[in-house]
Amino acid sequence: MEFINRVITALTEVHPTHPMLVHFPIALTGAAFLFILLASWRKSTSLEQAAFANIVLASLGTLAAGLSGVMDNVENYDGAAPNAMTKIILATLLLVLTAGISIVRYRNPELFWKGNRFLYIASYGVSFGIALVLAFLGGVILYGF
Image (cartoon, rainbow, N blue to C red; front, side, top):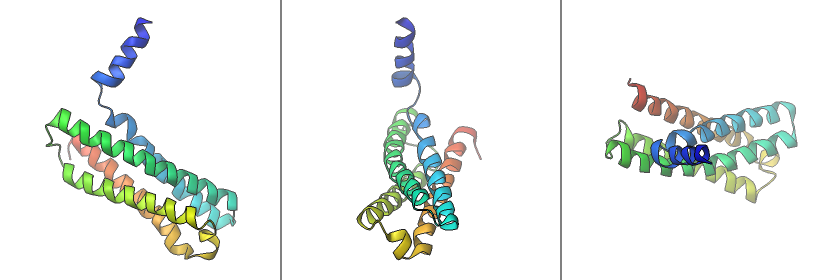
């Protein structure tokens, strides 16, 4: 029982929460982009649905990572982490983009087949690109430029 208490204390009080959550939007936007590219190539409904599921989860993960990032910035860097405002702007853009893709696709399940396929696929790629830039900027905070 002592070990479990130490783990819970480490996760909630000792270690910052943000680094534990940032990997979800990165991986989920990357997986969504891969699945949408494969869906386009293979003309697969199930791969497009997998892309959609990943982008929905990416929007939720972005929200969690963003909120924890703001809290960790205030707590650990007194609000002055390098590139903090740039990261906040990009994270907000990523949240709007992934949530927007999710809502538009939810309201129009045939979007991939009967909509502007190029724009739909490009929005997945842009969301992954933004996530990668955010990951790089996070590395700058930890390791320098």
